[in-house]
Image (tube, rainbow, N blue to C red; front, side):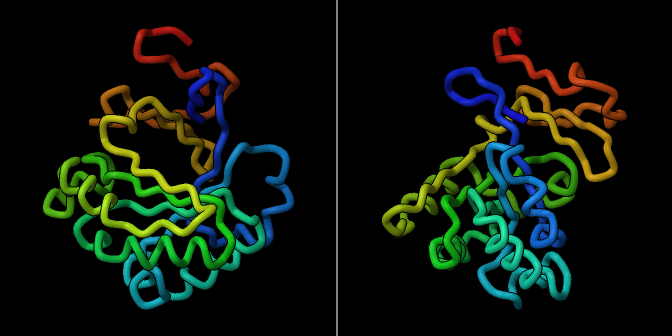
Length: 187
């Protein structure tokens, strides 16, 4: 969950797509966006990171959900694949594409050599050819703070405002566990 520019809470689902094809109908009308993580524009490159068969399952899920967008984690090993991923997103009918600047948290903390600087990420993004009708965005580390993740196991973790660490994982007990505050401390 995050906030849009008007301060409204936005609920989105980010998934690797493994079960999306069979669950897409359940999500329809209940979330503002569905985003599927792809780490490569074809089975060889994506499956090398996510596991055998994951590309097919993810793209089947995208088609079933008529997904809001595809997203990828932007790092050195995926930077050269961005154009192919954008072309794939457009070709299968996704409404948008987001490149998430890799954060030094979770698995990203163990991969410091993979991190691009914000300037490097901006240069990679500026060189892309964006097909008409496809929304693209680069979410930098600076803009990545203050979101809540509800994991598949029902536990919650919250990213801090400065996106340099993740708050503790705890059970989802009620709506109060989902409330985010703005940078000035307001809800």
